[in-house]
Image (cartoon, rainbow, N blue to C red; front, side, top):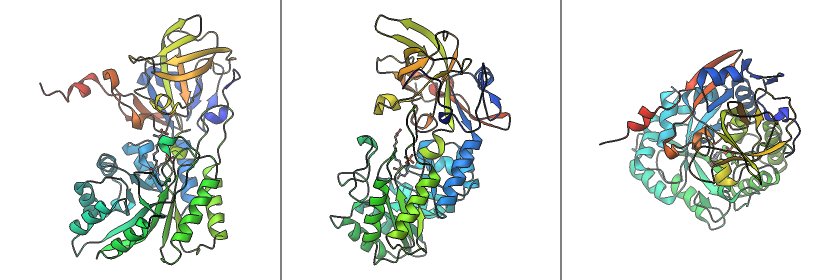
Length: 424
Ligand code: LLP
């Protein structure tokens, strides 16, 4: 990081940086902060649509938006309207997607520990794919699927690949709670078992090697393992899971979804995969991260001998990623976006612990002070979706902006919402 201006590539596509404001989707961020309050998540619909369409173009039908990265009804509808399926990992995610009116035939159901209820619901509504994760799940399917019913499945396998990413978000290695190991023979046993259940339509395999992956070698290795493993199976689909990385701070760069898809296709062709086999994926972060940003108001500035603390009115409850993974972010002063940023500060939240850091090393203009609106860009993925009510802090509102208009898609949580859970 440095004290130079914020790289425009970290802002949503439609951003226009003015002298004393930033427009996103033609809407003033300062006005959004005023109208909707802070903290506020702002998503640029143009960026969302462009990334969704890119994914729909480069992968085959069945490519799914990973809703865990950011979910609300508006987002689920946008994903489907732009050609994607929606991947859900729990009943809660499924519920929101169904309430949004998404056709079950566009829903992919994941989960390493699906309950009987979750499996039954997937069977009854007729989902696009259920991704089978364990032998216990296969037993449940055998018990729950009635002879006249059908269930379209993929089987999740662990390819034994250690992707270069944070250990908490690595999933493709042998030592994993997800899927069936190929090398131990479990994956083959799972395929045989599923093929023996009347009504199960096994379309292919799914693998996931982790999230925030920048280097394409991991995906190439994954493809190699999957193609080799399924050589004799005549499957019609390979889901090349593993989430493409995104740039969060100055100096980082990531392949585009287009480049990622092209690499997957050319590798598959080189490895001799029949061109009729569908290549699908499940991007989440690459769709929503850069489309979203958070607005906060500065409440306190504390100048200490060793550093300056800038405290804002949110924190680890709306973005736990810095605390969980040591993730870095940038920040800028919305009313002074072009000003030099010579002042190194630590941006912290309002929670009662020292770990409540949003940006460990941020650069702000000298003038930024109490009452100013600052923004952390690239917070569209795994911020709102992992938000909590720690210290009974209500979750922020979320707005979508497009063509000069802002629409509230998730209202701010209220103290009454939180109190509603109290029984006595
Ligand atoms: N499909 C499956 C089966 C997954 O497990 C994941 C992510 C995705 C798709 C979406 O991956 P993406 O494109 O978003 O990388 N909370 C962490 C990320 C955890 C990702 C877990 N699985 C974070 O904030 O970095």
